[in-house]
Amino acid sequence: MIHMKRICTLIIFLLILLLPASVYANGAPSKLSPKQYGVIVPYHESNINILGENLYFKNIRKKLFGRSIFMDVCVEYKIINTSENAMNVKIAFPCDEVSIRGYAKRLAITQDNMVIDYTYTSEIDYYEVFNVDREKFHHFLYNDKKVDFYGYRNPVLILFDISLESNKTSTLKLEYEQYSGFDRNTQFFAYYLQPAKYWNDFKNLSIYIELPENYSFYSNFNFEIKEPNKFNKLYYTHFNELPEDDFYFITERTHISKKVIISLVIAAIIAVVIAITLIIIIKFTRNVSSKKHKKPDAL
Image (cartoon, one colour):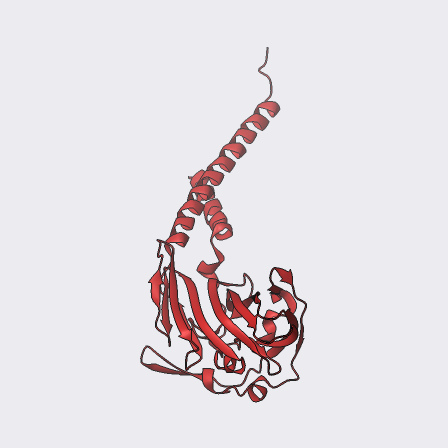
């Protein structure tokens, strides 16, 4: 009986250590407005065309000891300089400061696989300079319920320069972590598209969003599901021309995922095996110890 109690105690302790953090980590505040991110913008007028933009969202998760939900984002642009001469172009990219400061820092910019250095500033008013609607992502309609956020989050501007030869296509890639806003357990991801009008031309926008199978999905754009599997769903949409609206999507975890259930089963099996092994080792050690201290029989 004593051994069984010890085994149960060890199993519970080991399960706590082995359980995925997403199962029990839920210490977020109840409401937070969406972080501000968006399409790259030319800082000055130029003859640069965006031939295509591929926007990828994937790997939704929470910091182990943090409160924010975030996703990995990769944005790829095909750019061409339509002027007769080569030129250097200064580009601005809006993002929330949490993505570039402190422990959350993760922003990489490359042009044709070459790393691009960048600076950032919070002194420029993104909304005013690029004629962006401050109210755009403060009011949502989700499941026939109006969700309002208050307070403005002026994004920092990432500034960097690229060189473009005349009439030659170049690939620009940005990789970063995008943080959501949320209303309790519902996550809101927002992305400004309308400043793309500042380019000489903008075409072919493709958006990919990969979510676990246990997350719901809603967007102001129409998506189709591509390549579903037992663990994830890939949502996809495409526009030949720049859409008339900015983009957002809303997601919420609806149940424990199959991947987590499998992890729990494996964790439980490992915990039981470790607990039984420890009990056997302890019992064996005690038997050996008792034999060493046992008095010899009288002659």
